[in-house]
Image (cartoon, rainbow, N blue to C red; front, top):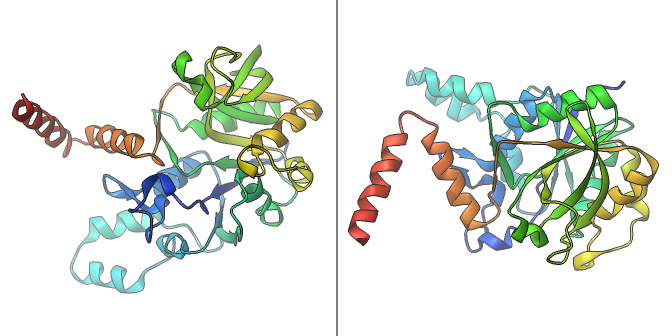
Length: 292
C-alpha cells in the first residue's frame, strides 16, 4: 500500500466572508492567537506524517509562500539579540528544502477545480486534502486518525463530525453504513440537503484522503452548485468505483473563514495556553459586568 505522504491545501479563495480584512491580506494568514490559520493546518498535516506540502494559490497569495520560506534578516536579527526561543520556534515550523510546492488556480472555479490544479504535483499516489479555513483542536491530529484508518482500508476517507440536526442544510452530509475498523462505510453523500431530508447529522469537516483517480473524474466534471466544479460531485462518482469510508472525528473544528468561527477559535486556543487563559477569563468577566 502506498503511504500518504503528500497533502494539498487549496488557498486560492478570495475570503469574501471576511472583507475588508482580506482585501489585501489572504484569509489563510489571519492569525489565531499568534499563528496564521494556515500554520495550524500545516502543523496538523505534519503531525500525521505528511512529507510534501502542496499549495494551490491565486493572485495576491504570495505572502503564504513567503511565510513558509526562510527570512534571513529576521533570523539573523533574532540570533544577534539572543532571542533563542523565538528563533527555534520559527525554525521548528520551517519546512525543509523541497518539501513545499506552489501552483496557481488562475480562475476561481470551485474546490474541485482547485484540487485538479494539483494533479501533476500529486502524481499517481494517494493524497490528503485539507481545507485551510478549518482548524482542529483535539488530543490527536484529525488527519493522523485518518491516515491510520487508511493504513487499514487502503481507500478514500472523509472526516466527519456531528452537527446540530437543524443545521444539516448548511453542510455536506454523509449516510453511515457498516462499521469498518475505526471508521465506517459511506453509503451516500448529499451536499446541503433540504431541511428534514438529511440522511444523518454527520457533516464533512474539511479533511480528506483521496486516490489519484479523482483527478480523471474532476477533468470531466461539469459545473454544479454555484456554477463551480464541485469536489462532492466527483466524489459521488468515485464512490461508485471505489470504497469510500468515513472517519468520525470527535474533537473541535472551527471555521475560520467566517467571523464567528474565527472568534471562537481565538478564544479556544487562547484558553489552551497557561499564559493567556486568565486574560480571556478576566476580559469576559469584566465586559460582562460592564454590560450588566
